[in-house]
Image 1 (cartoon, rainbow, N blue to C red):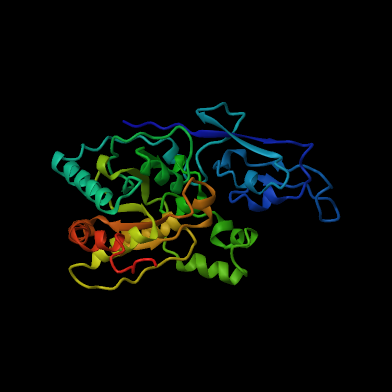
Image 2 (cartoon, rainbow, N blue to C red; image 1 turned 120 degrees about the vertical axis):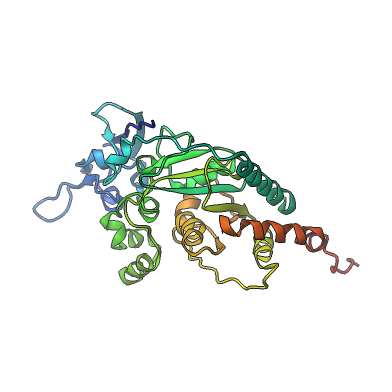
Length: 350
């Protein structure tokens, strides 16, 4: 059985640095903070925020990141920290925080070998620096694979970055730190500030509330609380059947992956990318739901919260397409890829 205790957080406010600007309260997606308002309808000059819902803290650190004077710190107390610290399971996810389920049977050896072979082909032909990542979305009620659960909360995009470096992670809702991605992937309900588009205006990522609402409306989401956990592993070490394979690539490598997918059919791709919700929507959920390959250029969140390089983009491939992609890649790797990389049509420099 797997038993998870809550990850708790201590929120520290440096009263000497705090100017009472209210950005922490404005940006917090789950209403952890409140400002004391005077009869004139404004906060007293320099008055620090009041922590009114410590138990709701996700540890996303948006408040600390937006504080102009560095007056806030969000400190992970670890699983089972004293009740005096802030935190617990994310809002709407307390049952996941105490999740107990049987372990799934290990993958058959032939499937493990197949996934490892796919990973080797991708890495060798494309000359990838990073491990391809196997992504699984475990529905509520299904047995869970034997994959480590982190002690701290991570954003979904951060878990993918860890997996490309060789780390395997399983994260129920109580281990996800991003309310947006967590709700998009069906682990929780979406907080009102995100559902309304309000936070996108505060971040100045969209021009108007109408634009923000349209962006939220058009992106796909899985039904709330339909997914028990996300599982990410290096593809060569897959612990359960992956739904999507994520590949972290430079643009030239992404081109070859798209060509590999078209090698036997000549089909041209209809790709969906926006710069919003990159890893959760564009790399994972769109391929998961559509059964089609998709690309992403990243988003504000994944680039601000991870070590992903400016030269990288992302390709999500539904597992059902992987045999075709791998076969096509091998064919392209026999001639087209090495010739292109050798610049055979580039005239000699004079």
